[in-house]
Amino acid sequence: MRNAGFIWIVALLMAAIDFYVFQVVKMLCQGSSSRTKSIIFTTYWTVSIAIIILFIFLPFFNTDRWPKNLRNYLFATIVGFFFAKLLAAVFFLIDDVRRLIQWAVGKIFFRNTEGDAENEGISRSVFLSWLGIGIGGSLITSLIYGFSNKYDYHIRRVPLQFDNLPAAFKGLKIIQISDIHSGSFDNKKAVEKGVQKILDLQPDLILFTGDLINDRATEMMGYEEVFGRLKAPMGVYSTLGNHDYGDYVKWPSQEARDQNIEDLKGIQAVMGWRLLMNEHVVLERDGQQIALIGIENWSAKARFPKHGKMWEAYPGSEKYPFKILMSHDPSHWDAEVRPKYGDIDLTLSGHTHGMQFGIEIPGFKWSPVKYVYDRWAGLYEEGKQKLYVNRGYGFIGYPGRVGILPEITLIELV
Image 1 (cartoon, one colour):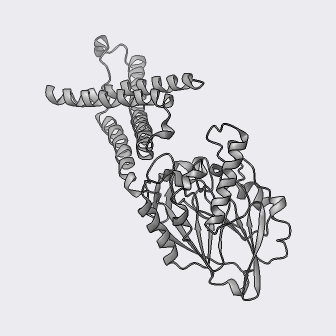
Image 2 (cartoon, one colour; image 1 turned 60 degrees about the vertical axis):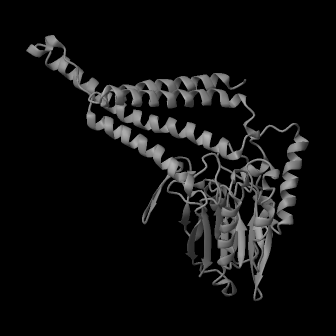
Image 3 (cartoon, one colour; image 1 turned 180 degrees about the horizontal axis):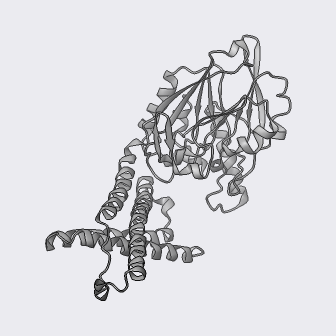
């Protein structure tokens, strides 16, 4: 297998971290009975070895044929335990560096002292050890808890004011959803409840900003009728995200890949969604008009494709006083929209999911994805232009949400 070398390197790294963390576990168990130690040590190594074996051998199986639940939870378990131990190891490393410095200072400045002959070691900090264990344990516990949040759809109400908005569109209610990822769903009734939440808000316009599937159009089987229920007086419009192109699976031919995209387009048409492919449409209300622009995926990040063609979508929209752009990847806003299209008033994106993991409290939000994307969740403003990044309706990879809940955005133009 082409990636076998990488797999073995990571497996060895996992084993090294396991041994490192185990030294701390042994130290913390010093005062425990032999029976307690035996239970803790056996459990630790049973779980650790099982996870390493899973990591090594999973790529050799055709997991695409496995039940989605089993595949997703196995992936989450492997990743969760790895990062939990890695995080704990950071604290242990800090303690070891402290001990090394303290030992070195003692050797250099106090080498002639009476106690130096005994060469006593510097004891490990119990506080830092427990802190590392606690934080690592909290991470894996939160990831397990997050399994229950993946369908906990959160409605975010976002009033937006624009001076150049035509009077007829004031009070317009727009629902934005993004990143459905139907291939990850395992609870149709829960998904239906989210769709009903959208309908209960009685939006004037519904906009979907990409990633309807994970890879294959067939992942929408059984969900066409669910999302086909989405209706709005001014229509339902959509655009493509990076996953909609099927770039993350190996197709038997280019023709098969192209057919997958065509099938996806057909599904959206059957659902009554108007897919915008590097084009714009005119929305009219009480005799006044605005432009809605939709482009294919365009990312400033090298690993994601640039299918979007603003030079095709934008021309002709200049004459309208207000413009909304649907662009899946938020990096597009700073890289191209703001520098070249300063009259696009509102850009709607998704893509990041808020990494499905983070902290959000009033006045503060954080997620590891912020170190990759400057604009990763919520509202951003520069001058007269606004960007809103939806946190995603679905999930992919990790089958859960921790701190960053699935989002239904209600934008009201006021």
